[in-house]
Length: 304
Length: 270
Image (cartoon, rainbow over all chains, first blue to last red; front, side, top):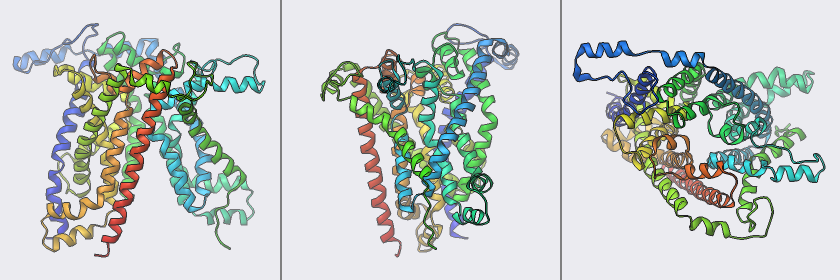
């Protein structure tokens, strides 16, 4: 028997503890969300109707199943607040991801053109802000964007504006915050594909007479598409469910779905509706999530 | 002709602007934490006043202590479980439910935090568990062990398996071969995984908000409720301290990985 096979058997036992943990704290909670989302809307504390009681026998269980209702989902589909929240979440995510690509690409491209030893330094410089707290980075921008903050002071000093501009509680502030927070997620996958590309290809194209613009659009950009895909998914998915950035930087007149869910849960205390909203959010994200999982698996297998 | 990367003026400009964009806000935040003036925007000279204020703020200190305890315990449990998961996925033979297992490990990486938080809270309520230190620790462990698993798994994937096989050919049983050969080689990834789990836990607001109970707020929860009321210089001081702590953690992590990689090199010819 090869050594590899002997090694595999005990390695299998290593799965037991993490497996049990994930079933207990990931899968089971999920079943709870699903069950409560199908319970009757009730502004109260649990237990929610119907109650599943395994000791009550089969008939009781059957009637409990029959009592499950899709009312919460019907409410979400018909209530403008939720529909608007989903539409807004998707709009914000699409816009922000486009901005991230627009800003991240030139930076990643610049990194890939640096001499090799400088590339490592640039990569560390891009990763380090990702390690500092999310909340702190948003707070840093509140400092800058507030009414008498640095940005307004600079704009006034340069006589670009005659009065302080209102930045906080606007969509521009939110987009600045999102781009700032997610930029490393966009730059790193882009850089990874651009750095692997052979510079000879671009040179050949320009030797054959292609103008710089054509070299970029016909050679560089198409070859970097895997990186573009990874970066776009890595940013788009979490931005749809984003809570902190819109809550602290955007106005409160139009909410994203993460905020609506939070509000429903903590302020209105309507857990069944909040659970239903979570399920719908997950369904909306299912396609990009599956795409992302496939991408990541492929990358892990390539790394092997 | 030597192939030197051709940096155009556009490349240099976009790099410089990009890095300035990433670093200036944090730099400004740190500088203003030493501002003597109460107004966050008026410079009143250097001072440690706001640090003093923080160390006298009982509620803030308690929140910081809670966050540190949660971060250390959840990162430790997550590193253990995540490493086991990575070993099972990259070394184990096919087992029943393997697809479900890897799916469960990848999903929390990209799932919106509001959903993870909500689902765990519903579980804790159903179990009638007292919410506080342990519930937040369990929630953070669940999230961060997935990150640890990915980091360790990619390191295991790039290892030369013939080293393990050689150890077993020389008479080691699989467990000893793992402890003597594989473990030292993946140690840098395990350390990096712990650091990542630690900072993620220290950073988390959403999941902690859902899973904690009254009277046991973590630091991000406290900061968040203060920030909603407006900018306070004390918050700048706290943020600077957190940044400093994370910087120390990163330096230790990179030193540890450098140390073990140089050890690995000297051990390789054996």
